[in-house]
Amino acid sequence: DAGITQSPRHKVTETGTPVTLRCHQTENHRYMYWYRQDPGHGLRLIHYSYGVKDTDKGEVSDGYSVSRSKTEDFLLTLESATSSQTSVYFCAISEAGGSGASNGETQYFGPGTRLLVL
Amino acid sequence: AQTVTQSQPEMSVQEAETVTLSCTYDTSESNYYLFWYKQPPSRQMILVIRQEAYKQQNATENRFSVNFQKAAKSFSLKISDSQLGDTAMYFCAFMKGDTDKLIFGTGTRLQVFP
Image (cartoon, rainbow over the protein chains, first blue to last red):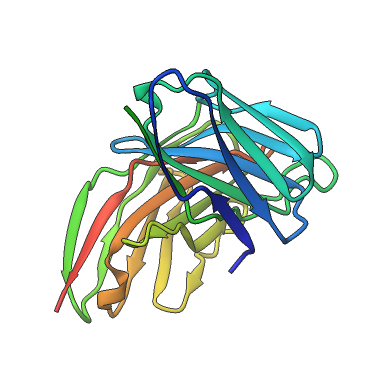
């Protein structure tokens, strides 16, 4: 199994509070991703990173920010949590991004974080 | 924009039988990749199989194989000799060749009965 951990694994918070989720990898992979999983939607990409301090938006980035100050850590922040952000959040990593064009590298997923915003 | 459709929300199969899960996708690209992921009750996302669009040969991994029909934009997953441990949600996913972003279908819940 790819060395990916997420913390916390479960969190309950109140509307309007800031929340930070952490993804940590031990594989030294360049690319990291944050997805959310909701019933009827599958997984949707929130943000991704292609290197330290290099990030970009995904499909559902509104209300989220990310930071990557070290290769091994990718943080997802909800600046002011809303009930619509209640979801299961997955981090993923891949070896993508060698010299430009994608080679369709497989993404390996962390165990997920279940977030409930009351 | 690319879309992935899994038209079977739920399926069931008896142990040792064969089951096929459907997936269709919509794209105008010629270079892309397709994936099947399994999500058991533990919620962990596990890669089942990967297919490169430029390869005509269907990918296989032990009891799992795909029927990749590029012209029809179809990518079905066949599970042979089903086992109780195959009970899970199965997600089909698409990746355009010049990106590293996965687009997922909504999933098919598979129940394997003894």
